[in-house]
Amino acid sequence: MDLRNLSVKALERVGRFGLPIVGRNVHVDTLRSVPSWGLSVLLHAFMLLLLAILIRTSGGLSPERSFTGELAMPEIADLTSLVEADRAGDPFTDLDGPDPPSLGLKPNDDLMQLSAQPRIQNLVDYAPDLAGPAPLKDLGVGVRGTLALPGLGDMITAPFSGRQGLDRANLVRREGGTVHSEKAVEQGLAWIVRHQKSDGSWILNVSDVCQSCPPQARIESQTGATGLALLPLLGAGYIHTVKSRHQEAIRHGLEWLCQHQQENGDLFVGGGGISYLYSHAIASMALCEAYGLSRDPALEGPARRAVAFIAAAQDPQTGGWRYVPGQAGDTSVFGWNIFALRSGHMAGLTIPRKTLRGCTDFLNLAAADGKKIVYAYQAGRPASAVMTAEALVGRQLLGWPRNHPSLLKGVGRVSADLERNPERNIYYWYYATQLLHNMKSKDWDKWNPRVREELVKSQVHEESCAEGSWDPESPTRDRWGTTAGRLFQTSLSVLTLEVYYRYLPLYRTADSDPLDDAPRVGDPEKAK
Image 1 (cartoon, helix red, strand yellow):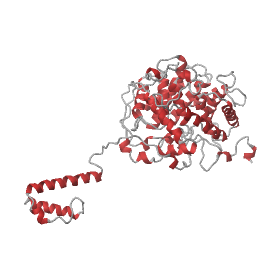
Image 2 (spheres, rainbow, N blue to C red):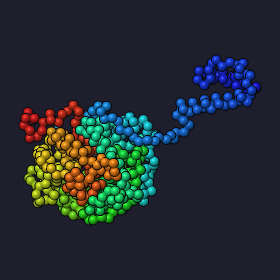
Image 3 (spheres, rainbow, N blue to C red):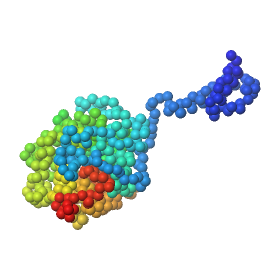
Image 4 (cartoon, rainbow, N blue to C red):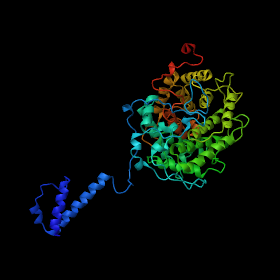
Protein backbone atom coordinates (compact mmCIF):
# COMPACT_ATOMS: atom_id res chain seq x y z
CA MET A 1 0.00 0.00 0.00
CA ASP A 2 1.25 3.51 -0.82
CA LEU A 3 2.73 5.17 2.30
CA ARG A 4 0.82 8.37 1.63
CA ASN A 5 -2.51 6.55 1.52
CA LEU A 6 -1.60 4.70 4.74
CA SER A 7 -0.66 7.97 6.41
CA VAL A 8 -3.91 9.64 5.39
CA LYS A 9 -5.97 6.75 6.73
CA ALA A 10 -4.02 6.70 9.97
CA LEU A 11 -4.47 10.42 10.44
CA GLU A 12 -8.18 10.16 9.72
CA ARG A 13 -8.50 7.47 12.44
CA VAL A 14 -6.64 9.62 14.91
CA GLY A 15 -8.99 12.46 14.09
CA ARG A 16 -12.01 10.33 15.01
CA PHE A 17 -10.80 10.15 18.60
CA GLY A 18 -10.70 13.91 18.78
CA LEU A 19 -7.09 13.92 19.96
CA PRO A 20 -5.44 17.33 19.84
CA ILE A 21 -2.42 16.13 17.92
CA VAL A 22 -4.32 16.12 14.61
CA GLY A 23 -7.34 18.24 13.78
CA ARG A 24 -10.31 17.00 11.78
CA ASN A 25 -9.75 19.73 9.14
CA VAL A 26 -6.43 18.45 7.73
CA HIS A 27 -6.77 18.71 3.95
CA VAL A 28 -6.28 15.29 2.38
CA ASP A 29 -5.09 16.63 -1.00
CA THR A 30 -2.37 18.60 0.74
CA LEU A 31 -1.15 15.46 2.50
CA ARG A 32 -1.12 13.52 -0.80
CA SER A 33 1.26 16.11 -2.29
CA VAL A 34 3.87 15.62 0.44
CA PRO A 35 6.78 13.29 -0.46
CA SER A 36 6.77 9.82 1.08
CA TRP A 37 9.80 10.47 3.27
CA GLY A 38 8.14 13.60 4.68
CA LEU A 39 5.00 11.68 5.56
CA SER A 40 7.12 8.98 7.18
CA VAL A 41 8.79 11.55 9.42
CA LEU A 42 5.41 13.15 10.23
CA LEU A 43 3.75 9.82 10.98
CA HIS A 44 6.53 8.64 13.29
CA ALA A 45 6.47 11.97 15.11
CA PHE A 46 2.72 11.59 15.65
CA MET A 47 3.19 8.03 16.91
CA LEU A 48 5.88 9.06 19.39
CA LEU A 49 3.68 11.88 20.67
CA LEU A 50 0.72 9.55 21.01
CA LEU A 51 2.88 7.04 22.92
CA ALA A 52 4.06 9.80 25.26
CA ILE A 53 0.45 10.80 25.97
CA LEU A 54 -0.52 7.20 26.71
CA ILE A 55 2.44 6.77 29.08
CA ARG A 56 1.57 9.99 30.91
CA THR A 57 -2.11 9.14 31.34
CA SER A 58 -1.47 5.53 32.44
CA GLY A 59 1.16 6.43 35.06
CA GLY A 60 4.13 5.03 33.17
CA LEU A 61 5.37 1.69 31.98
CA SER A 62 7.27 0.90 35.16
CA PRO A 63 5.88 0.63 38.68
CA GLU A 64 9.13 2.13 39.96
CA ARG A 65 8.85 5.92 40.13
CA SER A 66 11.09 8.33 41.96
CA PHE A 67 9.99 10.98 44.41
CA THR A 68 12.34 13.52 45.85
CA GLY A 69 11.88 16.25 48.40
CA GLU A 70 11.12 16.54 52.07
CA LEU A 71 7.91 15.77 53.92
CA ALA A 72 6.13 19.04 54.55
CA MET A 73 4.35 19.77 57.81
CA PRO A 74 0.84 21.14 57.24
CA GLU A 75 -0.15 24.54 58.55
CA ILE A 76 -1.28 23.97 62.12
CA ALA A 77 -3.60 26.99 62.14
CA ASP A 78 -5.70 25.45 59.35
CA LEU A 79 -6.43 22.23 61.21
CA THR A 80 -9.26 21.31 63.51
CA SER A 81 -8.94 19.59 66.86
CA LEU A 82 -8.26 15.87 67.02
CA VAL A 83 -11.29 13.70 67.61
CA GLU A 84 -11.77 11.34 70.52
CA ALA A 85 -8.48 9.76 71.58
CA ASP A 86 -9.73 6.46 72.93
CA ARG A 87 -6.83 4.38 71.51
CA ALA A 88 -4.18 6.11 73.53
CA GLY A 89 -1.99 5.64 76.57
CA ASP A 90 0.26 2.87 77.73
CA PRO A 91 0.23 1.99 81.45
CA PHE A 92 1.43 -1.44 82.60
CA THR A 93 -1.84 -2.49 84.20
CA ASP A 94 -5.03 -4.47 83.75
CA LEU A 95 -6.83 -2.35 86.34
CA ASP A 96 -10.56 -1.92 85.83
CA GLY A 97 -12.32 1.12 87.21
CA PRO A 98 -14.23 4.30 86.40
CA ASP A 99 -11.08 5.95 85.01
CA PRO A 100 -9.46 3.10 83.07
CA PRO A 101 -6.15 3.31 81.27
CA SER A 102 -6.47 3.26 77.54
CA LEU A 103 -3.97 0.49 76.93
CA GLY A 104 -3.53 -2.33 79.40
CA LEU A 105 -1.80 -5.66 79.83
CA LYS A 106 -4.76 -7.97 79.29
CA PRO A 107 -3.76 -10.39 76.50
CA ASN A 108 -7.28 -10.35 75.08
CA ASP A 109 -7.59 -6.58 75.15
CA ASP A 110 -8.37 -5.35 71.65
CA LEU A 111 -6.47 -2.17 72.36
CA MET A 112 -3.27 -4.19 72.65
CA GLN A 113 -3.59 -5.43 69.06
CA LEU A 114 -1.04 -3.70 66.87
CA SER A 115 -2.99 -1.98 64.13
CA ALA A 116 -2.43 0.62 61.45
CA GLN A 117 -2.96 4.24 62.32
CA PRO A 118 -5.78 6.27 60.77
CA ARG A 119 -5.32 7.40 57.19
CA ILE A 120 -2.76 10.17 56.79
CA GLN A 121 -3.60 12.07 53.63
CA ASN A 122 -0.21 13.32 52.49
CA LEU A 123 1.63 10.06 53.20
CA VAL A 124 -0.71 7.18 52.38
CA ASP A 125 -1.61 8.60 48.98
CA TYR A 126 2.06 8.48 47.99
CA ALA A 127 3.07 5.30 49.80
CA PRO A 128 4.72 3.65 46.75
CA ASP A 129 6.89 6.73 46.20
CA LEU A 130 7.78 7.19 49.85
CA ALA A 131 8.58 3.56 50.57
CA GLY A 132 12.16 3.56 51.78
CA PRO A 133 14.97 1.10 51.23
CA ALA A 134 14.86 -2.46 52.50
CA PRO A 135 14.81 -2.88 56.29
CA LEU A 136 18.01 -3.19 58.26
CA LYS A 137 19.75 -6.48 57.64
CA ASP A 138 23.15 -8.14 57.81
CA LEU A 139 23.85 -6.40 61.09
CA GLY A 140 25.69 -9.34 62.60
CA VAL A 141 23.05 -9.85 65.29
CA GLY A 142 21.52 -13.07 64.03
CA VAL A 143 18.32 -11.50 62.73
CA ARG A 144 17.34 -12.06 59.13
CA GLY A 145 16.03 -9.07 57.23
CA THR A 146 12.85 -9.42 55.17
CA LEU A 147 10.93 -7.28 52.76
CA ALA A 148 9.88 -3.76 53.64
CA LEU A 149 6.24 -3.12 54.40
CA PRO A 150 4.41 -1.32 51.61
CA GLY A 151 3.20 1.91 53.12
CA LEU A 152 3.60 4.15 56.12
CA GLY A 153 -0.03 3.70 57.14
CA ASP A 154 0.56 -0.04 57.48
CA MET A 155 3.70 0.37 59.56
CA ILE A 156 2.63 2.49 62.50
CA THR A 157 0.89 1.13 65.57
CA ALA A 158 -1.78 3.06 67.38
CA PRO A 159 0.29 4.15 70.44
CA PHE A 160 2.81 5.91 68.17
CA SER A 161 0.33 7.27 65.64
CA GLY A 162 0.33 10.86 66.86
CA ARG A 163 3.82 11.54 65.53
CA GLN A 164 3.08 11.91 61.81
CA GLY A 165 1.25 14.20 59.44
CA LEU A 166 -2.16 15.56 60.27
CA ASP A 167 -2.43 13.66 63.54
CA ARG A 168 0.75 15.35 64.77
CA ALA A 169 -0.46 18.80 63.71
CA ASN A 170 -3.86 18.23 65.31
CA LEU A 171 -2.29 17.14 68.58
CA VAL A 172 0.09 20.11 68.60
CA ARG A 173 -2.86 22.46 68.39
CA ARG A 174 -5.09 20.59 70.83
CA GLU A 175 -2.48 19.80 73.47
CA GLY A 176 -0.87 23.22 73.70
CA GLY A 177 1.95 23.48 71.17
CA THR A 178 2.52 26.26 68.66
CA VAL A 179 4.02 26.83 65.24
CA HIS A 180 7.05 28.28 67.03
CA SER A 181 7.51 25.20 69.23
CA GLU A 182 7.34 22.98 66.15
CA LYS A 183 9.90 25.12 64.36
CA ALA A 184 12.16 24.78 67.41
CA VAL A 185 11.78 20.99 67.22
CA GLU A 186 12.83 20.86 63.58
CA GLN A 187 15.78 23.20 64.11
CA GLY A 188 16.91 21.13 67.08
CA LEU A 189 16.74 17.94 65.05
CA ALA A 190 18.78 19.54 62.26
CA TRP A 191 21.52 20.42 64.78
CA ILE A 192 21.53 16.86 66.16
CA VAL A 193 21.91 15.35 62.69
CA ARG A 194 24.72 17.76 61.80
CA HIS A 195 26.73 16.42 64.74
CA GLN A 196 26.50 12.73 63.97
CA LYS A 197 29.78 10.84 63.67
CA SER A 198 30.73 9.19 60.39
CA ASP A 199 30.23 5.73 61.90
CA GLY A 200 26.56 6.51 62.66
CA SER A 201 26.92 7.14 66.40
CA TRP A 202 26.82 10.31 68.48
CA ILE A 203 28.97 11.39 71.43
CA LEU A 204 28.11 13.69 74.33
CA ASN A 205 31.15 15.91 73.84
CA VAL A 206 30.25 17.20 70.38
CA SER A 207 33.48 19.21 70.15
CA ASP A 208 35.14 15.97 69.08
CA VAL A 209 33.18 16.12 65.82
CA CYS A 210 32.70 19.90 65.58
CA GLN A 211 35.41 22.48 66.14
CA SER A 212 32.85 25.28 66.43
CA CYS A 213 31.04 23.88 69.47
CA PRO A 214 32.86 24.26 72.81
CA PRO A 215 33.63 21.18 74.95
CA GLN A 216 31.10 20.88 77.75
CA ALA A 217 30.30 17.24 78.55
CA ARG A 218 32.29 15.52 81.26
CA ILE A 219 30.45 12.21 80.90
CA GLU A 220 31.46 9.68 78.25
CA SER A 221 28.88 7.37 76.74
CA GLN A 222 28.65 6.72 73.03
CA THR A 223 25.68 4.41 73.62
CA GLY A 224 23.78 6.95 75.70
CA ALA A 225 24.54 9.78 73.28
CA THR A 226 23.34 7.74 70.29
CA GLY A 227 20.11 6.88 72.08
CA LEU A 228 19.60 10.51 73.12
CA ALA A 229 20.05 11.66 69.52
CA LEU A 230 17.69 9.06 68.05
CA LEU A 231 14.82 9.53 70.50
CA PRO A 232 13.79 13.07 69.45
CA LEU A 233 14.14 12.12 65.77
CA LEU A 234 11.80 9.18 66.31
CA GLY A 235 9.59 11.34 68.52
CA ALA A 236 8.98 13.67 65.58
CA GLY A 237 7.88 10.75 63.41
CA TYR A 238 10.99 10.22 61.30
CA ILE A 239 11.54 6.56 60.43
CA HIS A 240 14.52 4.76 58.90
CA THR A 241 12.30 2.95 56.35
CA VAL A 242 10.58 6.08 54.99
CA LYS A 243 12.22 8.73 52.85
CA SER A 244 12.77 11.98 54.70
CA ARG A 245 15.51 14.48 55.38
CA HIS A 246 16.66 12.47 58.41
CA GLN A 247 16.17 8.92 57.15
CA GLU A 248 19.82 8.07 56.66
CA ALA A 249 20.91 9.56 59.98
CA ILE A 250 18.40 7.40 61.84
CA ARG A 251 19.29 4.35 59.80
CA HIS A 252 23.00 4.69 60.50
CA GLY A 253 22.40 5.31 64.20
CA LEU A 254 20.28 2.17 64.53
CA GLU A 255 22.85 0.16 62.62
CA TRP A 256 25.55 1.32 65.04
CA LEU A 257 23.49 0.26 68.06
CA CYS A 258 22.70 -3.15 66.59
CA GLN A 259 26.27 -3.79 65.53
CA HIS A 260 27.55 -3.08 69.05
CA GLN A 261 24.91 -5.03 70.96
CA GLN A 262 26.24 -8.03 72.87
CA GLU A 263 24.60 -11.45 72.76
CA ASN A 264 22.96 -10.91 76.15
CA GLY A 265 21.29 -7.73 74.85
CA ASP A 266 23.68 -5.26 76.52
CA LEU A 267 24.07 -2.09 74.43
CA PHE A 268 26.67 -0.29 76.53
CA VAL A 269 29.95 0.59 74.82
CA GLY A 270 32.65 2.06 77.03
CA GLY A 271 32.46 5.12 79.24
CA GLY A 272 32.26 5.56 82.97
CA GLY A 273 30.44 3.06 85.16
CA ILE A 274 27.97 5.69 86.37
CA SER A 275 26.49 5.89 82.86
CA TYR A 276 26.12 2.12 82.28
CA LEU A 277 22.42 1.40 82.89
CA TYR A 278 21.42 4.97 82.05
CA SER A 279 22.93 4.44 78.60
CA HIS A 280 21.49 1.00 78.02
CA ALA A 281 18.00 2.16 78.96
CA ILE A 282 18.11 5.22 76.67
CA ALA A 283 19.44 3.19 73.72
CA SER A 284 16.83 0.49 74.40
CA MET A 285 14.08 3.10 74.19
CA ALA A 286 15.39 4.13 70.77
CA LEU A 287 15.51 0.55 69.47
CA CYS A 288 12.03 -0.26 70.77
CA GLU A 289 10.46 2.90 69.38
CA ALA A 290 12.17 2.48 66.01
CA TYR A 291 10.81 -1.08 65.87
CA GLY A 292 7.36 0.02 67.00
CA LEU A 293 7.21 2.75 64.37
CA SER A 294 8.65 0.84 61.42
CA ARG A 295 7.78 -2.80 62.21
CA ASP A 296 11.17 -3.57 60.66
CA PRO A 297 11.68 -7.27 61.50
CA ALA A 298 15.43 -6.80 61.70
CA LEU A 299 14.93 -4.62 64.79
CA GLU A 300 12.65 -7.01 66.66
CA GLY A 301 15.46 -9.24 67.93
CA PRO A 302 17.73 -6.39 69.12
CA ALA A 303 14.81 -4.63 70.80
CA ARG A 304 13.63 -7.83 72.48
CA ARG A 305 17.13 -8.64 73.77
CA ALA A 306 17.60 -5.08 75.04
CA VAL A 307 14.38 -5.33 77.06
CA ALA A 308 15.37 -8.77 78.36
CA PHE A 309 18.68 -7.32 79.57
CA ILE A 310 16.81 -4.61 81.50
CA ALA A 311 14.68 -7.27 83.20
CA ALA A 312 17.80 -9.30 84.07
CA ALA A 313 19.61 -6.20 85.40
CA GLN A 314 16.81 -5.33 87.86
CA ASP A 315 17.77 -5.54 91.51
CA PRO A 316 15.86 -8.58 92.88
CA GLN A 317 15.69 -7.01 96.36
CA THR A 318 14.52 -3.44 95.70
CA GLY A 319 13.04 -3.86 92.21
CA GLY A 320 15.04 -0.91 90.92
CA TRP A 321 18.06 -0.16 88.77
CA ARG A 322 21.18 1.85 89.43
CA TYR A 323 24.58 2.06 87.75
CA VAL A 324 25.35 -1.63 87.21
CA PRO A 325 23.14 -4.73 86.98
CA GLY A 326 21.83 -6.02 90.29
CA GLN A 327 22.73 -2.91 92.25
CA ALA A 328 20.19 -1.43 94.70
CA GLY A 329 18.12 1.04 92.72
CA ASP A 330 17.82 4.81 92.63
CA THR A 331 14.86 6.77 91.28
CA SER A 332 16.86 8.54 88.57
CA VAL A 333 18.11 5.40 86.81
CA PHE A 334 14.78 3.69 87.55
CA GLY A 335 12.94 6.33 85.51
CA TRP A 336 14.90 5.70 82.33
CA ASN A 337 14.52 1.95 82.64
CA ILE A 338 10.78 1.95 83.21
CA PHE A 339 10.49 4.29 80.21
CA ALA A 340 12.43 1.77 78.13
CA LEU A 341 10.06 -0.99 79.29
CA ARG A 342 7.14 1.25 78.33
CA SER A 343 8.57 1.72 74.83
CA GLY A 344 8.98 -2.04 74.47
CA HIS A 345 5.42 -2.58 75.66
CA MET A 346 4.10 -0.07 73.12
CA ALA A 347 6.05 -1.84 70.39
CA GLY A 348 4.30 -5.11 71.25
CA LEU A 349 7.10 -6.78 73.21
CA THR A 350 6.23 -8.82 76.30
CA ILE A 351 7.25 -7.28 79.62
CA PRO A 352 7.50 -9.83 82.47
CA ARG A 353 4.94 -9.22 85.19
CA LYS A 354 7.62 -10.01 87.74
CA THR A 355 9.62 -7.05 86.45
CA LEU A 356 6.61 -4.75 86.75
CA ARG A 357 5.86 -5.94 90.27
CA GLY A 358 9.45 -5.10 91.14
CA CYS A 359 8.89 -1.58 89.74
CA THR A 360 5.98 -1.08 92.11
CA ASP A 361 8.05 -2.42 95.01
CA PHE A 362 10.82 0.04 94.27
CA LEU A 363 8.47 3.04 94.15
CA ASN A 364 6.97 1.98 97.47
CA LEU A 365 10.48 1.96 98.97
CA ALA A 366 11.41 5.29 97.37
CA ALA A 367 8.33 7.04 98.78
CA ALA A 368 9.41 9.50 101.46
CA ASP A 369 6.05 9.56 103.22
CA GLY A 370 3.48 6.98 104.26
CA LYS A 371 0.89 8.10 101.69
CA LYS A 372 3.35 7.79 98.79
CA ILE A 373 2.94 11.40 97.74
CA VAL A 374 6.61 12.49 97.49
CA TYR A 375 9.73 10.50 96.61
CA ALA A 376 13.46 10.44 97.29
CA TYR A 377 16.50 9.58 95.22
CA GLN A 378 16.94 6.47 97.38
CA ALA A 379 15.05 4.96 100.29
CA GLY A 380 15.73 6.81 103.53
CA ARG A 381 16.81 10.06 101.88
CA PRO A 382 14.87 13.35 101.93
CA ALA A 383 12.14 13.91 99.35
CA SER A 384 13.06 15.72 96.13
CA ALA A 385 10.73 17.51 93.73
CA VAL A 386 12.71 16.19 90.75
CA MET A 387 12.52 12.58 91.97
CA THR A 388 8.84 13.03 92.85
CA ALA A 389 8.06 14.05 89.27
CA GLU A 390 10.00 11.10 87.86
CA ALA A 391 8.47 8.60 90.30
CA LEU A 392 4.91 9.81 89.75
CA VAL A 393 5.24 9.35 85.98
CA GLY A 394 6.24 5.78 86.84
CA ARG A 395 3.11 5.49 89.01
CA GLN A 396 1.00 6.67 86.08
CA LEU A 397 2.56 4.07 83.80
CA LEU A 398 1.97 1.35 86.38
CA GLY A 399 -1.73 2.07 86.54
CA TRP A 400 -2.51 4.78 89.06
CA PRO A 401 -5.70 6.45 87.77
CA ARG A 402 -5.77 10.16 87.16
CA ASN A 403 -7.91 10.75 90.27
CA HIS A 404 -5.72 8.75 92.68
CA PRO A 405 -5.47 10.89 95.87
CA SER A 406 -1.71 10.47 96.28
CA LEU A 407 -1.12 11.27 92.61
CA LEU A 408 -3.22 14.43 92.82
CA LYS A 409 -1.37 15.64 95.91
CA GLY A 410 2.03 14.74 94.49
CA VAL A 411 1.29 16.58 91.26
CA GLY A 412 0.25 19.59 93.34
CA ARG A 413 3.62 19.50 95.14
CA VAL A 414 5.56 19.32 91.87
CA SER A 415 3.52 22.10 90.33
CA ALA A 416 4.05 24.35 93.35
CA ASP A 417 7.79 23.72 93.22
CA LEU A 418 7.94 24.54 89.52
CA GLU A 419 6.14 27.82 90.21
CA ARG A 420 8.71 29.04 92.72
CA ASN A 421 11.87 27.29 91.51
CA PRO A 422 13.96 29.61 89.27
CA GLU A 423 16.59 26.95 88.53
CA ARG A 424 17.09 25.88 84.94
CA ASN A 425 16.93 22.08 84.98
CA ILE A 426 15.96 20.36 81.72
CA TYR A 427 16.07 16.94 83.37
CA TYR A 428 13.41 18.06 85.84
CA TRP A 429 11.39 19.84 83.17
CA TYR A 430 11.41 16.74 80.94
CA TYR A 431 9.75 14.56 83.59
CA ALA A 432 7.51 17.26 85.09
CA THR A 433 6.15 18.18 81.66
CA GLN A 434 5.13 14.59 80.99
CA LEU A 435 3.59 14.25 84.43
CA LEU A 436 1.47 17.39 84.14
CA HIS A 437 0.54 16.72 80.52
CA ASN A 438 -0.87 13.35 81.51
CA MET A 439 -3.03 15.02 84.18
CA LYS A 440 -4.44 17.82 81.96
CA SER A 441 -5.37 19.91 84.99
CA LYS A 442 -5.01 23.61 85.76
CA ASP A 443 -1.41 22.88 86.71
CA TRP A 444 -0.72 21.86 83.10
CA ASP A 445 -2.39 25.00 81.81
CA LYS A 446 0.00 27.11 83.88
CA TRP A 447 3.18 25.09 83.32
CA ASN A 448 2.90 24.39 79.59
CA PRO A 449 3.18 27.97 78.24
CA ARG A 450 5.97 28.72 80.69
CA VAL A 451 8.27 25.85 79.73
CA ARG A 452 7.31 26.02 76.05
CA GLU A 453 8.14 29.69 75.66
CA GLU A 454 11.29 29.41 77.76
CA LEU A 455 12.61 26.64 75.52
CA VAL A 456 11.68 28.47 72.31
CA LYS A 457 13.34 31.66 73.57
CA SER A 458 16.51 30.04 74.89
CA GLN A 459 17.26 28.02 71.74
CA VAL A 460 20.32 29.27 69.83
CA HIS A 461 19.04 31.32 66.88
CA GLU A 462 22.24 32.97 65.67
CA GLU A 463 23.69 31.89 62.32
CA SER A 464 26.40 29.52 63.44
CA CYS A 465 27.03 25.82 63.80
CA ALA A 466 25.25 25.94 67.17
CA GLU A 467 22.01 27.19 65.60
CA GLY A 468 19.09 25.02 66.71
CA SER A 469 20.82 23.70 69.83
CA TRP A 470 20.43 24.63 73.49
CA ASP A 471 23.51 25.88 75.32
CA PRO A 472 23.73 24.41 78.84
CA GLU A 473 25.61 27.52 79.99
CA SER A 474 23.30 30.17 78.53
CA PRO A 475 21.09 32.09 79.17
CA THR A 476 21.62 30.59 82.63
CA ARG A 477 23.51 27.53 83.72
CA ASP A 478 21.53 24.28 83.61
CA ARG A 479 21.65 22.02 86.64
CA TRP A 480 23.02 18.97 84.77
CA GLY A 481 23.63 20.23 81.24
CA THR A 482 27.19 21.33 81.86
CA THR A 483 28.02 17.80 82.99
CA ALA A 484 26.14 15.96 80.24
CA GLY A 485 26.77 18.49 77.45
CA ARG A 486 25.02 20.28 74.60
CA LEU A 487 23.67 17.11 72.96
CA PHE A 488 22.00 16.09 76.22
CA GLN A 489 20.59 19.60 76.66
CA THR A 490 19.30 19.76 73.10
CA SER A 491 17.80 16.27 72.99
CA LEU A 492 15.85 16.67 76.25
CA SER A 493 14.69 20.13 75.17
CA VAL A 494 13.33 18.75 71.89
CA LEU A 495 11.73 15.78 73.66
CA THR A 496 10.03 18.19 76.06
CA LEU A 497 8.61 20.16 73.13
CA GLU A 498 7.40 16.90 71.54
CA VAL A 499 5.24 16.06 74.57
CA TYR A 500 2.08 17.03 72.68
CA TYR A 501 2.27 14.11 70.26
CA ARG A 502 5.16 11.82 71.12
CA TYR A 503 2.76 9.61 73.09
CA LEU A 504 -0.99 9.79 72.81
CA PRO A 505 -2.86 10.93 75.94
CA LEU A 506 -2.29 8.50 78.80
CA TYR A 507 -5.87 8.50 80.07
CA ARG A 508 -8.94 8.07 77.90
CA THR A 509 -10.70 11.31 77.18
CA ALA A 510 -12.49 13.18 74.40
CA ASP A 511 -12.43 16.79 73.25
CA SER A 512 -15.96 17.23 74.62
CA ASP A 513 -15.09 15.72 78.02
CA PRO A 514 -13.38 18.41 80.15
CA LEU A 515 -11.31 16.74 82.81
CA ASP A 516 -12.36 19.19 85.48
CA ASP A 517 -15.95 17.94 85.19
CA ALA A 518 -15.01 14.38 86.12
CA PRO A 519 -15.56 13.40 89.79
CA ARG A 520 -12.29 12.82 91.60
CA VAL A 521 -11.47 10.80 94.64
CA GLY A 522 -11.08 13.09 97.62
CA ASP A 523 -13.00 15.95 95.96
CA PRO A 524 -16.37 16.10 97.79
CA GLU A 525 -17.76 18.90 95.66
CA LYS A 526 -17.08 17.06 92.40
CA ALA A 527 -18.33 13.77 93.80
CA LYS A 528 -21.79 15.08 94.72
